[in-house]
Amino acid sequence: MSQQDSEGTETVSIHHWYDPDSKPLSITDGDDATVWDEDGNEYLDFCSQLYCTNLGHSNEAVITAMEEQAGKIPYVSSAKRSPTRDRLAEKLARVTPESLSHTFFSVSGSEANETAVQIAREYQDAPTVLTRWRSYHGGTYGAGALTGDPETRATIERHAATSGAAKFLPPIPKAFDTSDPEELARRAGEHLEFVIRNEGPDSVAAILTEPIAGTSGAFPAPPGYFDRVRDLCDEYDILLVADEVITGFGRCGDWFGVQTEDIQPDMLTFAKGVTSAYAPLAGVSVTPEIASFVQTNGFDIGQTFGGHPMACAAGCAAVDEYANGVIDGVTDLEEGLASRIQQVASKHDVVHDVRGRGGLWAVEFADPETETSFHDPRVDDGENPVAAVLHECRDQGVLLGSGRPGFQIIISPPLIATQPEIDRAMDVLDDSITAIFG
Image 1 (cartoon, rainbow, N blue to C red):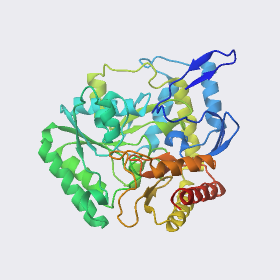
Image 2: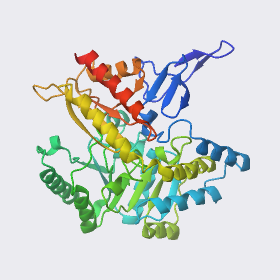
Image 3: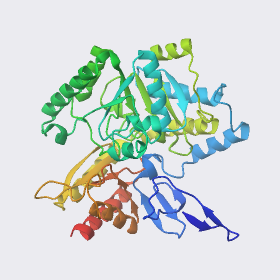
Image 4: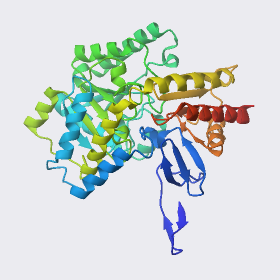
C-alpha cells in the first residue's frame, strides 16, 4: 500500500495476504474491543484482528510489564537464560494440561508448529505427521506442509512441493455423511485409524490437530472423538500435538481448547493470545519425557527473537490477567454471544449452520433449497455474497473474520467484550445479511 509520509515522500508497505483488488483498513488506535482507522472511523473488533487480541487493545498491566522490561534489558539472546523467560515458562507449566511441563519458545505460531514437528520427528525417529484437511497451521514453508487448507497449500506449493505430512478428514458432518454426534465420532475415529494403518504406524511421528477448528469453521469435535484420537495415539505410539495457536488462552472457554475435551496431549503449541498479541511470542509445551530427550540430546536450532524478553514480560502479565477473572468470564461471553448469533440465524434462511465454543464461532451460508454454498472460492469465480456481508458489516462499524473456505464468517471478539457490544455487533450482522441477501 503506497502513501505519502510527512515530507511528501512515497512510502511502500506490503501487507500480508496481499490482494491488489482490495484496500485494507489503516488502524491507528484501539481501546478494549474498539479500534479506529486513520480517518477516525470507529469499529467493534469482533475478529480480534487475527483472533489474537484476547484482552482487547488497551490492557494497562501488559503495557506496563513491557515498559518495565524495556527499562531493564529489552533483549537477551535466545541462546542464553532470561529470568523473564523462565518466569513465563513456570506460569505456563501451571496452566497448561497436567501432562506438560517444559516450554520451548519461538516467535510465531507457524514456527511453533514447525518446532513441534521437528522435536516429534527426532523423538520418534519417524518422518510423517498427520494433520486434518482444511486445517490451518501456518503460512511458512514447513507449516504450509502441515496446513490442510487447499488455498494456502496451493500457494506455497506453486513451485515446489512440501513433504512429510499426510492428511485425514476432520470430524464434520459433511465429511462422513451423518449429523448424529455418536455416529460421527465413530466414523471419524475409524477413518483416522485407517489413515494411520495405511501410512504405516511406525512411520507416523505425530498427529497435529486443532482441538476446535479455527478459521476453517470453528468446528467442535463430537463427544468422544478426541478420546478415540488419544487412544489411537497410545495404541500406535504416536505423539498427540494440540495446535492451540487460536484456541488457547481462554478463547474456547478454558485455558486451552484441549482442556474442554479433557484429554492430555504430548505437546501443545501456542502463540497469539499468550501476550494478547501485544508482542510476537509463541512456543511449544512438552511432556517431561520429551523435555528430557531434548535436554539430553540437544536441539541445534533456534530463532533470534524466540522468547524475546519484552514479549515474555507481556506474556507473564497476560497470564495473570487471564487468571484474574477473564477466563472465568468466557462462560458468560459464550452464553450471550451464542444466543445472539442463533437469534440472527433464525431470521435468515440463508444461514445454513452456526457452531463454535467459547469466544470462537462460525456462521455458514448456503442456498436453503439445495444446501450448497452460494459461492465456493476454491472452485468458483465471481463475486462472493458472504464476502459482501463482511464488507457491509465493516461499513456499519463491525469487523468480522473470513473463514476458510469463504462461505462462512468467523466471529471472535476480545474476551473482555461486553453484552451491549455483542448486541450491537449482532444487530449489524443481522442488518448486513438482510442488505446482501434480502
